[in-house]
Image (cartoon, rainbow, N blue to C red):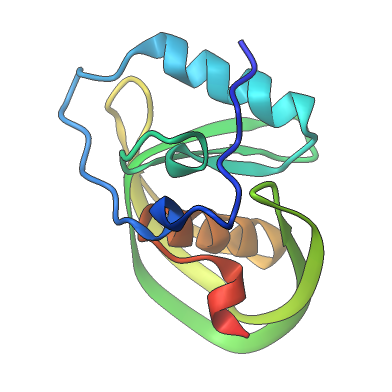
Length: 144
């Protein structure tokens, strides 16, 4: 099911999300998130963008991999700051150049509650940072 996106005018997008308790996540929510991201042709979507205040985001990368990140923790960012034009499904038709670190280290759980620790570079790191901002109540416009 395609879900309605919360738009940037709504201050609830600045609300910090709560951790997900193990095995409490409804799998239909994950399917609905992927249905929604595919409909709007996005690369990332965070739960607060559809009004769910849980520490969850999904990534739909260009190489057809779909990733679910539950209770993510970005514990390191390094490398040089790179500027890149970003957009957001909750802020349609607006794009701005945003500086972000080029390499991140993240720990998260997948939908089977298996823990993952990854180092991510480049565009995918930027997407993860953008979505992680959403679950922390921050929008990319806050960097302007």
